[in-house]
Length: 357
Image 1: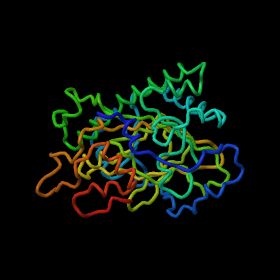
Image 2: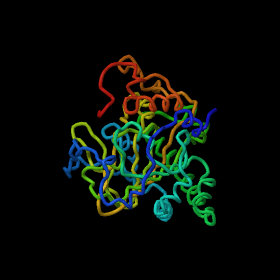
Image 3: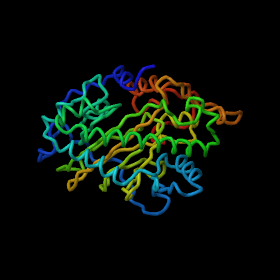
């Protein structure tokens, strides 16, 4: 069974640009200049235009999460069990990493056919302009890469990442079952989750992102609009806004940081598994001229070669199967070719467009 690293190597990303030191630029280069954001942000502060914030201690959490997945494709969670000290530690690690000199960070640069290390967002090759951000991807142990960055001090940072990864894995399991419970899917119904439903063989990656202050934020883009190729993504963001999600009928809606909260995105594979009941959320990141924004995404998917398809409980005479069976490996290949049209490429039935829905 191929690893997540092997899957990404099979679908290399060729970006013909060397990452400059964004912190040193006083003006926005033409290569980073996007047209003014065409879709205006919806600043309506009414309840219907706020991304749901859900307390996991709420006895009704599963139903609340299910409703959020159906109507938004995203929600925030509180009382999730992740120690605030661990969130501060991973934030400090990110701040330390991205504050290294540019030539130092490039010691751990990601190769075109690689998955881990420092570099531009993998989606960069789909856009004519560059994004005002830098990233660092971790799959498995960060030991080798961290030795390149911190020859004397790598153990301390490795420990933080491994603790964060293990904690996120447990939270992802909890969230998966809360999401599936709202669809009436039980542990007995999902064999690939394992005998105890612990998702022990799931694939995962950790993505650290930095969005430096920008001299002309209205004409720049931190991270262009995309959906995640995952089952779910758990995002920690520092106290700087920038993340936006697209909701049909509302346009772009800002997801403000909530103290101690985590953002959970529905991914493409969850949309397939739920037979379209849950919507993979289109999202992007804007930048600002005052403060650096930092985020850490835990990208959670199934075992690489497990076929994901609409669950049989969600298919019937009045609910036709909407998607083909696809492994994560196969889907990443489709995504690498077709990007945000990938879901429509594995769709069986006509109907609502997958884009901007």
